Length: 452
Image 1 (cartoon, rainbow, N blue to C red):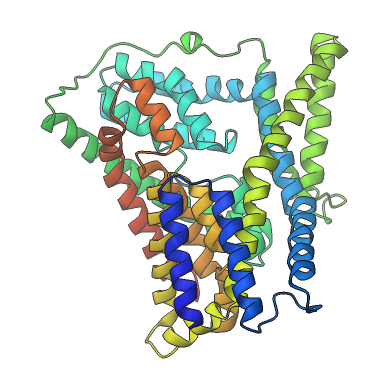
Image 2 (image 1 turned 120 degrees about the horizontal axis):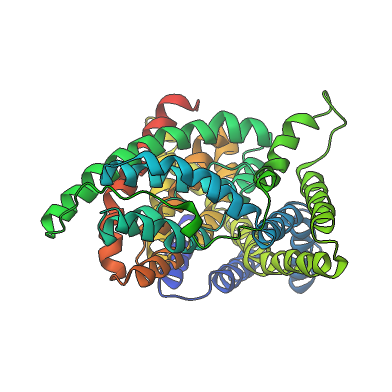
């Protein structure tokens, strides 16, 4: 019975998100409903139940807000506020100015396209939002590529796929994945996710080269070698920020290796973010000699943190309630019992979670909604099956981002398609093959190189 109820809940969850219902509301509602069902089935819904449904239910929800908002949630809010502040002071624009310079030496349009994809992917270190990065590249990289002979659909496909693979250890989903995998952030980011992403990125780049060229030929879009060169000064960037601002967005990452308790006194990731914001504000003051401008800039940071609470932290809480409700009704144990006797159960479970996450991400257009909803289940499955949680969580996280890019209704696809004056369905077609190549590489990498 528990397996049937849980399966129906998962189907209903996916269907409602696909139909466009707010993911946070759906997760909250479905989770609370399952907890009520669990209570009337005689199952405890918290560790020390009082026997009163209203008391237990509301105390659990508030406790989850307290824990998620104060620890992981605070780090995520600080990160997103930090990213907004880096954009405001022009540090992210300096990165663009520096990274674009190698492109001026490339003459082949399709090689330039690959170079643009790789450089755009590197920019994800500084700009964590796929939609923000896609829109930014449409305003900067897209006009350059089209002027140099790349077709608009090919250039748009590159701009829309630069955030499909995680590179930065300060991205919210990597931080969440590391916590759920019970892994140390630096080891998880640089030992698991970064190598996986770099390998997949090479294959995605090659797939872009052949797939976009094939589609251009099929659609009669002839791409020729151009003798024009890239003028970085025409990128419509903030040119007032000094060149050394290039390093500011990377200071928290650098700090993880310095303030590790051995080289220097240990500072947490959240502390490093705050330290970088303070240092950046001090530098801004000595650059402008205007306290008013510095305070206005910090207000951008605070607003970014507030938006992060609404968009990410509440989603984390809602996903936590839903995952806990599945465990409370006995779904997790029933699911494990059903696959325990099947050969290579760990790989089967990994495939199932990857496929579910990918399909929900494609259908809903939200990578976070898909990953946050199902990652809560993975540690419990791994613990009860006796397998490495990273084996389940790492590929789930990666395919959630890939699925978002493949969706014709995702923010990044719609925004990029609109800016390029293309149909979102046409853009989704251009994105599909490189993205599926990425999924295949992620799954194979997991099976071969991540221990079960």
